[in-house]
Image 1: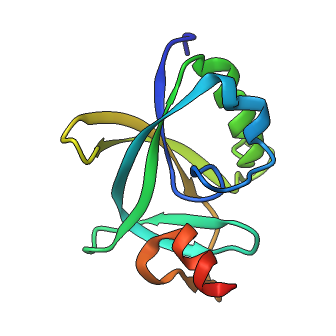
Image 2 (image 1 turned 30 degrees about the vertical axis):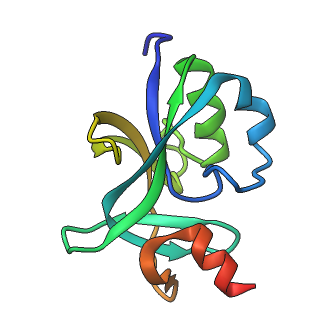
Length: 138
């Protein structure tokens, strides 16, 4: 991977308005582009959500983040998301590229961290919006 600008779809603790512990280490390298969504289902994994692909008409709500120096930031995020490239451990998340449309109609190809473990006995998040879910839960 070259060190060029890329995009990330954030649906959980990396969303704007969430006080993520990782935020301070990447804040200078990111820029929020706006809201978007992707087909899938969102689950409460405990202290964070997990997104699962789904071809149903369920959409996960999130935001597109522009990453200015992709190599540095994606290494930090892979570690934060327990996304491993080695086969020694099963990654909790897999980072994949998907196409997204921003509210202004611009299409971008962005990374998303899909949850990679079973969601048995996990609660599906109503409305597939993690920030909204946390406000209702409090």
